[in-house]
Length: 594
Image 1 (tube, rainbow, N blue to C red):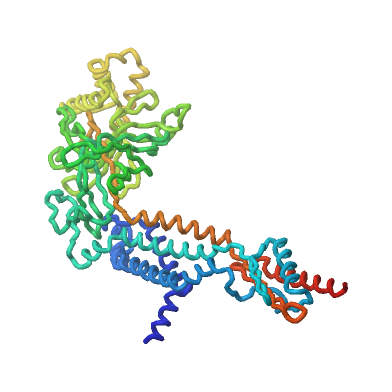
Image 2: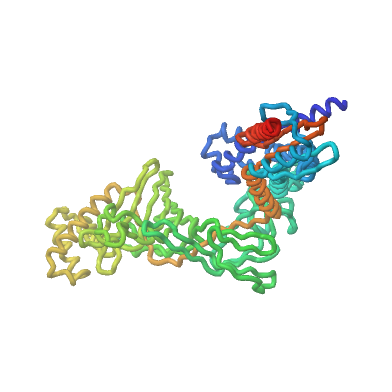
């Protein structure tokens, strides 16, 4: 039994075994870096398909750093490295303290030499030559012997101790942050993730709630501007756990700045930390890579989204253009019933739509080749027959070739890009002129009159005189507007729904995506980093080189034995040993000749 245990310890503490563990951890870390972790399971299922989703889920790929096999490898690596330290620390410390201990020689072409020099003379010659070669020795003498020892990089063994200790501390910190007690509760069913993401937080059962004094956690919360929260949501499997916080986070304001191409440049949350009585404890501006630390909890700026923008919408009917537009109010995510049985789901709202000026058909400015088309709303319409189409409505008109247009993008299911409907804008800045013209055309055709270009032109001029008198004398502008109206009517023939939604106004509201993290083990990672850097620097830049000379009186001469040791190849220790032998031979021959 003892023999098997000894063999097990040898394997456990072997370099090959440790390297194998590190390779496995490196592979796992690559997976955890490339594949976003702790995302909703629906995202993974959509990305990988049913078979690979189930396979990867069984392997714990979606939470690599909390997977049982990953934590097991960490634990084994801790044991392996700790046993190495326990076994080798005494030897390393003794090597730093006792410079007189024997080493196996690394070089030299001689096994020994008897010189005719006396013990004292030989000692003095070798000490002088070692000093000149950069190996100033310490000397210990007796009546019949002498020892000279020179050690460079005496504390080289500290590099081994520090690097191995850093690995142990790293792994322990990672295991502490993994919150093993919570993992155990999840495995044995004491904690059950909530899978209903629309469940009000007050209705989440106790079995899906974590304790306030939880050792470690990493949660997220989407907080609209002006709102507060005292809880975070910790992703777990295909659900989440509610983590109460020891304070209240209040998002006072949120602001964002952009590059000229429309990409976010910086987004900042103005956060108040309050107690549960509303008293402000701390205020900070949190931005990416500049978290707020309070009572051991880090608050990071992770993302931003719409926080419940209120939209004022008008629904214009093409089948009855003379009807008063139906006014409704909605927020992102709401579903409305419009034009009898059409279901309209408000999908998103964007404050900026920056595209190349050339693509928009406008002239670029000197400062930027891009143009901002302004706010837009995206919504999906489902017809009574189940057909769906997605629409993108721009709030502000765009100018093209001297004419302002209401811009409406539309794409049916399966279409990769939008097709755009451009309705000319009238004097009121909206599409009422166009809708009124459609009404007049409909009234004429309803009376049995055949619609010809002459009839359409006559009705258009009449509409100009009543609704747009400012361009009565501008025939070029009239012609441009008439052509725009005809083009819009042609585009309407392929329009998939009998109405169009316009944005009459909006009250925008941002929401900050905040990550709340409590990782007490992080301090161990910092300590491990410092120790690892120090250990590597000592190992690479302070290699140990040791030369020992033993002299023994032998009749009228002296026996000389020189040994050396280097912790790393490529040193000059063998050359120095050979030079010392040559020097003592030269001195001996010179004395003999005299």
